[in-house]
Structures are given as structure tokens and as C-alpha cells.
Amino acid sequence: MYYRYENTDILKRAKSPFEIFDNMNVYLVRHGESVSNALQKRLKEDGKILDEDQKLEDAKITLTEKGIWESKEVGEKLAKHLNLNSKEMKKTLVLVSPYERARETFENANEFMKFDFEDDNVFVLNDLREQSYGAFSMIDKSIKRKNYGNIYDECQRSTLSFFKPQLLGESPADVASRLDSVITFIEKFNAKSPIKNVVVFAHRNVNKCMLMKILNLPAEFYDDFDQSKNAHVICVEKGKFKEIDF
Figure 1 (cartoon, rainbow, N blue to C red):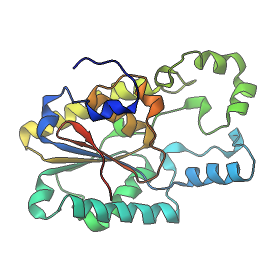
Figure 2 (cartoon, rainbow, N blue to C red):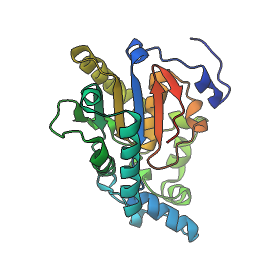
Figure 3 (cartoon, rainbow, N blue to C red):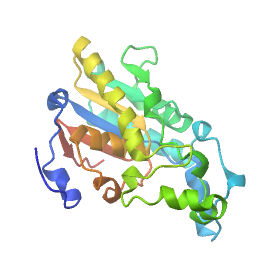
């Protein structure tokens, strides 16, 4: 399907080029509010900046109490939306990022979804980890410029965020490339045991890149699509984007 990009209205006509998604629904769930989300919000409200002394280990960042509540709420809504009885659960594949906040989101959501952690349709996939910002992780733009000077400016040279590299980290394009393995995993699992739904518990940038991979969306889309809400769900139903109202 050939088209010129205009804006996010492209979601109204985009269709996945992957045949596997023609008869499958994909739900991309962002984790609930994390400790780092709350820290960044609080510092912004106080007119302060996030510097390198306040960095947290990304893989180990946990949920706040609000994030736990958000996770349970989205789990309850997904369970109802998917009608997760025993028959439907066998047709559903659950994929989870290895990072703690995504694991906690799934575990709390699962109080309502009721998947058995030992089932052969629940997996943690390393390639669903959040984008790595390397040396630029969790620090204010002013600190990046001050401490990394020309290196930071060079990384910002590209006009599209999708291609902008991070010192010792990844660009969103790098994230999209590793998500090929996730799509391959889904294809191979489905060939062995046909599935109706895939539920992914991951991160803002990962979910955005996964949506772009599934629908073959252009790089410009990355900057225009907002997925800033915690515990937000993106749905691709039978190869097409669909707004779901919980």
C-alpha cells in the first residue's frame, strides 16, 4: 500500500502488510506509572531539572502505588474486553518486557486476567525492553548539552526523532529493528498453535515502534503519535488500528 504521509490520520487507512495479523488482534499495553515517571513529574512541577546524580537503573524501576492501581484497572478492562474465559485464554498470547515496571504491570493486571505464569502462552521477551538512552538516560536537555557538548548536538542533527542516536544507547529505529524478532516469535508461535489475541506489556517507545512495525508506518509518524499516558492500550484489530474506549 503506497501513500504519502500527512499526519496521524494515516491510521484510518493503514493496513498491516503482514498476513499473520489479518486474523489477529494485538493489544500494546504501556506500564503503569513508574517511580521515574513520578520523579520527573515532581521535578518539573517544582521547576527543577533531572541530573545525572538522580539516575535510576532502568531495568529495575518499579511502579508507584498509582501505577499499581492503573495496572489492575487496565487488567480488569482487558479481561472484560477480551472475554477471557478458559477457551479465549488458550487463544491469547501474552508477551512481557523483562523490565520490572512492565513485569509488575502484567502481574497486577493478571489478578483479573488470570493467566497461569507456567502456561506455554505467557513469555518474557528481552527484545521488548525499553529504548536505551545510554549516557543520555533520564537527564535534562541542559545537562546533556553541558556534559556532552558536541556529541549531544551531533546526535540531534537528524530532523526526525526516529533516527536520532543516543550516546551508548539506541535510536527508535534501533528499537524497531529488534522488534523484528518479536514479530517472528508471534509468527512461529501462531504456526504451532493458532492464536486470536496478542497482549504485549511493554513501554511507551517500544509500543509506538511496534505499532509502526505492524502497520509499516513511516518515520515521521513517531513524532506525531502521542502515547504519553501510563497504562494506555494501543489496539491493532485484524491488521488495522482501532481506538478502544475503556
